Image (tube, rainbow, N blue to C red; front, side):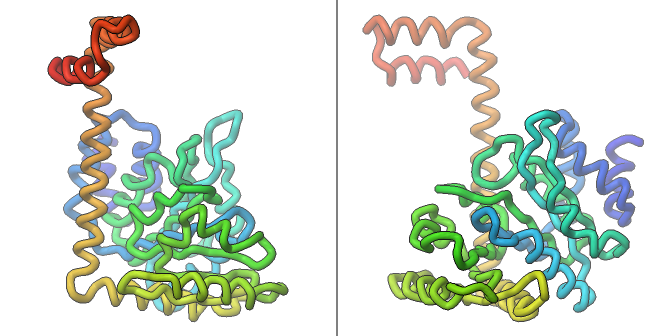
Length: 311
């Protein structure tokens, strides 16, 4: 099957073709990826893109599983892209998220795929934006991107999702540490999961205090859930859908997606420039300029200008 047939079958809803396209996105050549993206892009843009992030151990996978059930109850087709830590042996995803989502294994309206982070910082895989494009173009109503547990400054989820759900849990440490990590700043909706534990009210109170220090035109709602029992999940899904409705008014969604496209274009362009620089290095120009800078013959800016002039 060539790539044209693969794309056509995926657009027609064939799950095997969809799975093969996602594998191509992760492992295929850049030439094939360019062709696939070119064919899929006109069909994308209709899905609601939801990011679920938060520190390790807050129950993101269980929460995502419960949210999918709620959306399915509302007759919406849902795809989940779960970014897992990489296996140190094979480099592949550890598949922990798929294990927790077996409730939907036989549901044709749900598609779950794990993707290895492969050491990429930011809680995402480098291939995540292209994978989201594949799932969006395939006609799913909601596409959920669940990140690996994030740490300091790993907030890339906000650059690929329409709505970002930041999940916290009581007893996971001071919420101020989460603020230092930057993840609170990207939240469109807050979820305090495992809210049946002691300390939930304190976590909610700390979040509200932080919001008083300042926020944009959207005040992120705070919802409490117990994902293992389903408690509060319907209200969380309502909040996520409410944010999407708000985005859809006054051109906000268009502007947010334009910002996302601008970032993607910049990253692709920088990647192309890096590739061409490596080609220039084949002639030893890098080494020559570096030696001349080290010996004081050239300053770094002049050397860089000469390198760019060769592109």
